[in-house]
Image 1 (cartoon, one colour):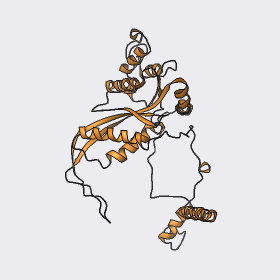
Image 2 (cartoon, helix red, strand yellow):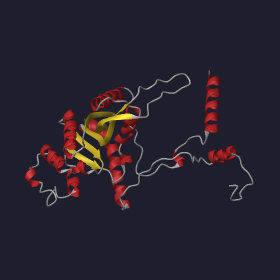
Image 3 (tube, helix red, strand yellow):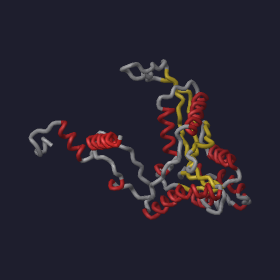
Image 4 (cartoon, one colour):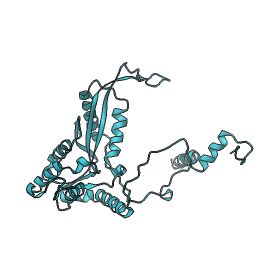
Length: 301
């Protein structure tokens, strides 16, 4: 501002006050994911489908015994062992973790988030995430309630619409596999689009809902993966992949028993505007609000 001639001088504190007044935080940033779908009408329709799936989930569960689960993989989880013992926190000093580590291998967590129950159910932890791994995971999930209906919300990864998965769903639906065609040539198995269309058929007891490309922010399981990353992996110290797998399963069990709950899904395909979020503009307003509330409580008492 001085170099451009707006003012002759200005303090850092004053700049901070201007930024606070304008609700700008240049020291912060967030990563953002932009969809690869070029047609805005197609994107809008796909987003509406996903959002409607979440909103319809409670009625389908309680009235038609149909589970709605958000599914995805958390690949490349590294079993890292620190080369020195972690020093616990002391008064006035934080925990100190050794910087260097030994690698013991990686695992992939495939998780299911039950949208209605707010639980992470039937997780699969394996070394790979092939189409066979994913098809087995879906089989493992469905067997937890084999007679129920299942709506599985997934992204567009190729293993989520593989030939193996199509054949498995066809068997569950009583469809003759010889009528499916041949992969890359004909019929239902011909392409990704034809396989997705088959898996998305609303007439099926087991059906899939696919996100628009590059929109994992619509996937509820990603929120849970963020919790797993922060609570288990960020400061983890694992002597083997087996130890890491046990730690992950123990945490998922603890998470389900304690603070897991259904997400209140409010997104409808349109961004939330500032007018819809009523919050104090800065810390002074927050402090004033708390003080006013405390004075009100004191008067009532």
